Each structure stands twice: as structure tokens, then as C-alpha cells.
Length: 308
Image (tube, rainbow, N blue to C red; front, top):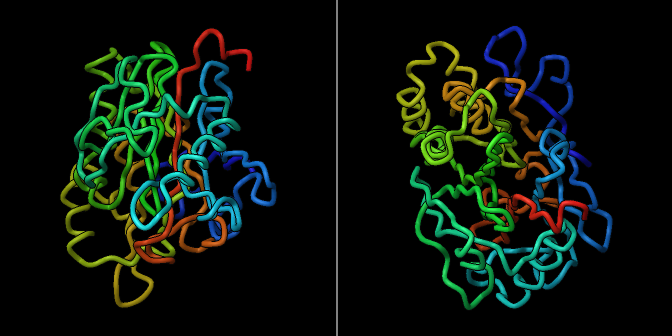
């Protein structure tokens, strides 16, 4: 299933929990990744980004019985690293990218980022390789480099500057969200590549949604501080269905991306909630800290691979 294209809006009349008002009856719990019943994996893709012939991207997900850990691509203990490497190769083959050119980082739930050059390809790709460094966003304008982030509820954000072209892969949990990692990535692309935010495209992939993301008051207080300039619009990302508030991380990041200059129609939010649909997604909240990890992959195609 290709992710539904849903630009996050900022007016109360057009948005409910990050989705268009005319789609409010469609629960994120009903979303299913494409290829979920297939033995050969086919990554979930953004409809918005799939229109770019020189871009390769996708999200892996959970397929029960695939490999020894349901298609997991994370190397962290207690997962089998050799199996995870085999899964990376399978997922990447389905996307038309070379897994040996993956670049990863040590994700720390902050707002730091790393600029990736062509000769960084492969850093963090295999079990025996070192990642590029500690950060929560990777940016590059180098073709053939596969920027990769790992997730199990935290939000994957893929950013594209179609003019340079240049790309970014961002890991945004609630801590990274309130630290401003999405806006920092846009700023870094503007500074490094001359990217114009109003021309950039963003895909916000499968993550825990507001339906399941119960948080403490310190989380929503930090959000309100980060989003103070948004005024009442910041309250769109907070609900209180019971005693505790819920935080809408995808919508919060969409609002911050708009504040950074992206157009609402250039932002796509995947409706899949990783906790609701634990059969098809890895979820820290739903399955515990030892669960597997899905990968978000993005690459500028080389001239040789553009016809693939």
C-alpha cells in the first residue's frame, strides 16, 4: 500500500489529528504496509516522493516469519546481526539500492545532524562497520549514498530538495521533536546546499500516532515551549482523551516543518500507527524495548541506476 498523501494543514477547519478532515473516519490502525503478505519484501513508499524518478526511498516494516526476527534491520542486542544484515540487503534490493552503501548514525534523540559525503558510503552498513557519528539527522547531495535511520515508534522524516537535488533522513521521537530536529534539518540543507524550504518535500513515515502516544505533562510542556510562536495552532498536536495528554508527533513535526517554510501541500503524513498495528510494524511501546527496528532509506540515484 502506498502511503496516503495527506498534507498537514494548520487551520482547525481542515485538520483532525494531522489528517484531512474528510478522512477523519479512517483510523491509522487500519493502515497496512504494501507487500505485507509477500515473501519478497517491497518497501512502503511515499506517493509524494515516488513521483521523482531520480530518487530511491522506502520504509521496511515487520513481516512475521521473515528471517529470524520478522524482517528487522537493526543491529542492536539481542538481535542477530548477520540476520539483520541479510534483511537490509533484501529490503534494499527491493528498493533498487545497494545495501553496502548504507550510512547510519548513532541516534541520540536530539537535534544534531551530520553531512554525508560520497566517501562516507558504507559507514554503519554492515555489522562490522562503524556508523558515521552521533546525531539524529543525515543530509547529503551525493548520489548513490543510502541515508538510513532506524525506528520502532519514533517518526522517520525524509526530506527532499528537488532542485539541487539533496536529501535528508531524520529520526524524530518526542525528544527530538521538542528539540527541533525537523527544523534543524531544513536549516542545515539550506545552509549546506542552498535549499529553499518552499520547494522542499517531506514524507513523515509510519510512527506511533496520537491515539496511542500517552505522555507526561513534561512532554507537552516542552512542546508548547518549542511551538510557542505557533500560538493556538500548537494545541492541534495535543489531545486529552483521559487523565493524561496524548502527543501527536507526526502532526507536531508537520507544523514545525511549515514554520521552517515548507508548504502544507509538500508534506505527506503516513497514517500507519506502529503501536496499533504491531503485526506489521515494530513498536517499542507495544512490544517492548527489545523489539526489532524498521529502516527508513533514501538515496539520490546515480545516472546508472535511474532507469532501474
